[in-house]
Amino acid sequence: MKSITTAQQICKTWHLTDHETRQLLDQPRAAQQIVTINEGLYRIYDLDQERASAWIKTPNGAFDNEPPIRIMLAGDLKRVRQYVMYHVYNA
Image (cartoon, rainbow, N blue to C red; front, side, top):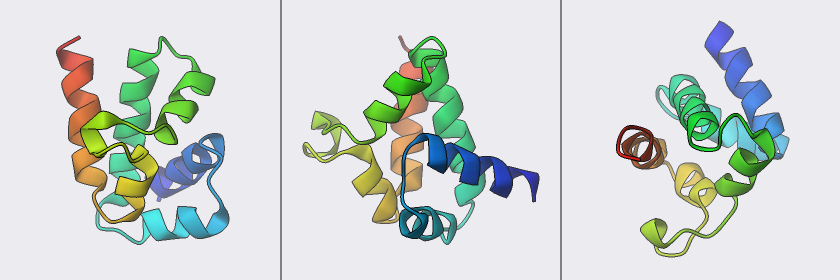
């Protein structure tokens, strides 16, 4: 339950709508994946929430120039998590 609340708070910092938040949290293991993505972005951006939040909505070549949030909303949180964690451990 705590991870769901944490994931909801992260979605707010990412400036997602209530609908987008519900859509993300309806996915299997979504809460933990959102927490992991956010923690990874914090590490990549040296705890800069503004930059981490901006990354979520910025087109990215790794996702066919779609913003990561679109990939996540389409049901592929795992793909975004793997991408972020790759960059955490291989930077």
